Image (cartoon, rainbow, N blue to C red; front, top):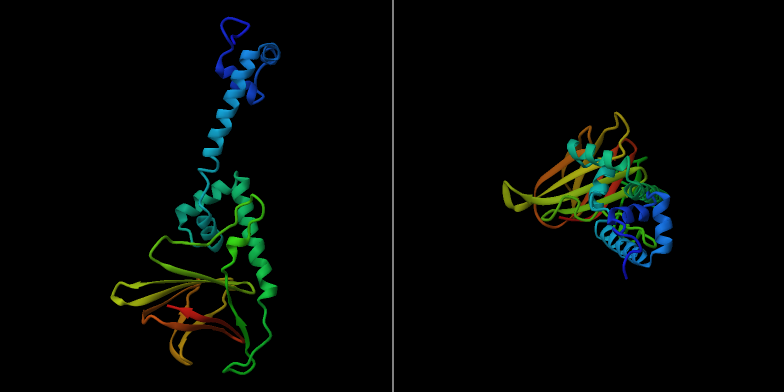
Length: 244
């Protein structure tokens, strides 16, 4: 087939027609020219294939959106992700889905008050957030917290009520045969103090304060199973069967 006019309609004009930006005469021409309609169809297929390959290539990875929600990004990446969310509806929807999911955890994670070693203290058992990969439905991607800070670090995320607790276990650089537990608590009220108590085999090993930003550290730990108890006034939060 050949175009009914000479020279043939330029490819740029056909691409403009595909994007609904071409002048009316291009549509008139395509209605009459089998050759140009075939060329336009081929260009449309190529454009769709390219768009599929490049779909969301400039979007932050799912784990980085999780870090953004948890407040784990450094200042530079925080500004970059915030700017991206301002114009990307896909990523904004992922963050909204994640926020909604974590809010739904609160009612399900509220246990009845349990006996404790201190009187008049309400105990909350934090739940390991390990089902985020099942959040997605249909073609929508599910947000994930997997590998938040890359390979080589073991990381767990717990949630209870309005609190989110991230635990990361690394090798202690000062003692290669020991482990370091790094923690971040989100959900503290302004001025609220929190103390972290590390237990093993029903024995308290050590205690440290959670700073005003929610950070705490336990260093020089042997590998094994621990329990972490946070105390704040008449409230305790327990993280059970914590493997280090």
